[in-house]
Length: 233
Image (cartoon, rainbow, N blue to C red; front, side, top):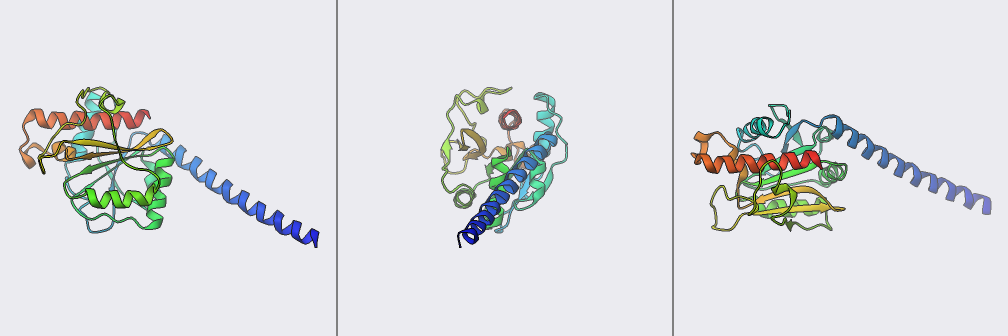
């Protein structure tokens, strides 16, 4: 009887160890993948009906600006990747925007969490109307974490370009001040969320929103800072 119980205990213990080893190897592989593809950025495609594809000229313009001003060599054409795809681990930074509903399945939330824990970085840009939905879905990714407003002296505001007053205001919506929120996992900033700023509108081609040159430059400089910070950390 004791021998039988010991065998069961042994098999159960081995099963747990093998499961943990598999999870560890997945994280190592994902981290290595992120390191190898260190000069790539992707647009994050999500379900729910929101326009994940909005601002099509924004990211290419930001990449061009960052390559010229922050010593990066990012592929000029960003790739589109879905939240639940293994391919997300090929990109150190993924960018999410839109105006409406966002929905992550349980598997997608788990995949996004593994990506961020492994060293990935998510930039969310509220294109107006995203806030309620993205906060709900991020809770699926990190149930124990809350968005924290990032202080003005944080390094993300002080890279190649300095923003002494924090996140710049690009577009007016509800006459609220712009806020940069972050998710911190074990002390590392894994997600930056620009709210009431609309950075990505400022990255678009000039004719799209007719932003004054100085406003557009502020948006591009802040976006460049985000990329530069993510690459360094």
